[in-house]
Image (tube, rainbow over the protein chains, first blue to last red):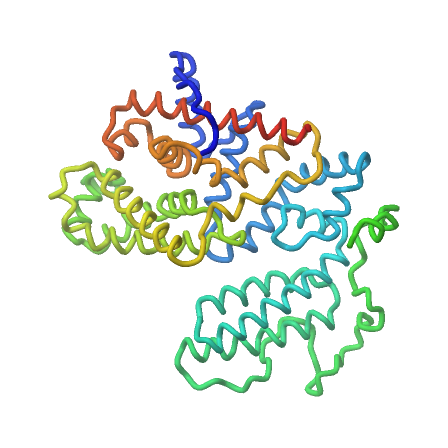
Length: 232
Length: 195
């Protein structure tokens, strides 16, 4: 682009052979030992390209969390001890940010709140898409929302979001299959039973404590005091 | 051919060209993952997902299906036939995208290295891999196509030569140049993170 023209690189025989072997290995999906950053990056890239076509987003999030995130978390936390900037960035990261996995891991509550907010947006967008007959777009948005809802820790919030989502999905499905729209009442919410009145009937202790039923994986260290000062 | 032995690709292609449904299905099932990776590599993610690229991959499969009966007339190896079609469909998608909303590559550009992961190589490699679609765009077209076909699709240097109409030796020189360029970019990323 704007760079000066570099002299053409003339590879010698050894380089040609080494590069050819490297590309053969990468092309067959083999992970190479060694310290070559570019080889690692190409390997990760190919892995990413190989993710199953459907539900890609969910699958990627899960795989990334398992494989790569650990090293990123380690690196980021190490850097954090010096700067604190990563923590601030991670705590305010949105689901499409590279720091999002860290947010999910270190700040489950915040991840939950952000996920809920973004999921709500996606559902609203999906509703608009349905209204405008952009059905594939609507389906995509609903799938994204569903993935996000999985991060929501509050059962009540989760249930409300799922109900919204199911309502839009029912309309969408009706449009897709061409049948009349069924009763918009949410029929298949995969969350714990809700009594017909919409009140949680089972004596689960969860809603009473707004923090949700899951214990947080981390004793939130002593980082949070940092955040409000840095965050907008 | 013999009993339950696996068909060679040439046999499979020959049967598929004749229109034997099983052979067509088998052939496309085998090609599909390669085509998906090709389209994703060329088009990149949009908003973090490969939905657009996967749609294009689907179109490529349909186009191959339609062109299959005419494969023999073209006098090219099968991989050249397949990835010639794929390259045309991707080019169509790029053109459509420049008319409408921006597609792909730009998606990954603003994603700068956050904070300073220090010398952690994995973090650097992860960052590099996320931006690879963009960096590939900085390579000359032939080099970019070679890297995509070699790494994403998994073709050999000989096969890539047939797809692009060049000798395997020329492919090897070009791929080394491409890797050299990408390594330069990688090391400038290190500097960027360190500064």
